[in-house]
Length: 234
Image 1: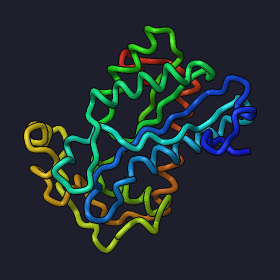
Image 2: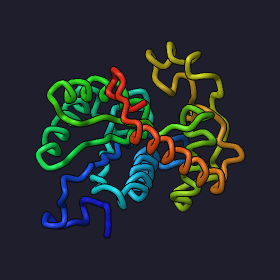
Image 3: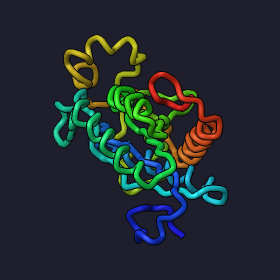
């Protein structure tokens, strides 16, 4: 039976399920990765978590939220950003609606730019007595944007969407060193290609292992269910 809420009928949504909400973006990922990269990864992690727990609890995966807060990439054609305030409000209204029939809600976030909205909305929803939290799609030794990690993941998840011949190193400096300039001029000010990292050597086998790591990390956080002040499972 599918865990995808969009494919179900209302009589099959029973048992007050846990709802996983993939949260992505529509933003540039260099000349070699599609605008859907964050959404594809977040969806895959959510589906992986759902598959791992469906034998022990009711769970569904909601349709992916594919518009996020991507203002730092807005100077690249094709990027679509709704900004922090709109995203925050969307998260709040999703939680209020889902809570009428769900036992809990977990946002699975694939884009770092969404964190500001999440850490504003989720604590507010917890204060309103909703059982909700969020988890990031992270690995221990990741790069910032459109580098080896995301390229490997997409070679595993959606290889037909990757233009590997266009993959080139971007700005490989730590993001902490770039933030001051990025806050003023966005990603283009520090990387004309939009890449923060080096996709060289990316491969599907590595991508499969990275996806497993993301899913396992999310599962550990969900099992422990310790929520920090940002509403994030630790």
